[in-house]
Amino acid sequence: RRPCFRVCYICGREFGSQSISIHEPQCLEKWHTENNQLPRHLRRAEPRKPEALTSSSCMLTAENEAAYDSAQAQLLPCGNCGRTFLPACLTVHQKCCR
Image 1 (cartoon, rainbow, N blue to C red):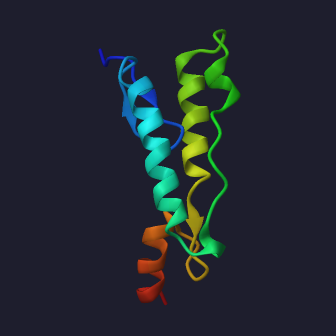
Image 2 (image 1 turned 120 degrees about the horizontal axis):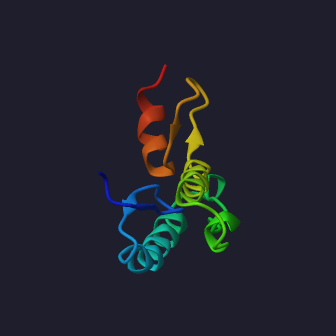
Image 3 (image 1 turned 90 degrees about the horizontal axis):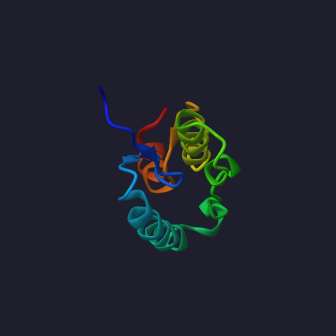
């Protein structure tokens, strides 16, 4: 049986129930640093913790789905092919996308 993991609402990675509280502030700080280095037209709004994560009545799978959806909302689509990327990766991809 697989242990219960929680999904980070910022990056979409899985963490244990104890380490997620350590990871999220560090991940948000890293997100701010990377976002501020982007050109203004690629900057995104700060990710918000989904409400499903703050209510105790929701099941873990619903919380993880809401967190994963929040992380996926941070991705930007390529104007040529429609694939989604993190902003830093999008600029690299657009150089070779036809």
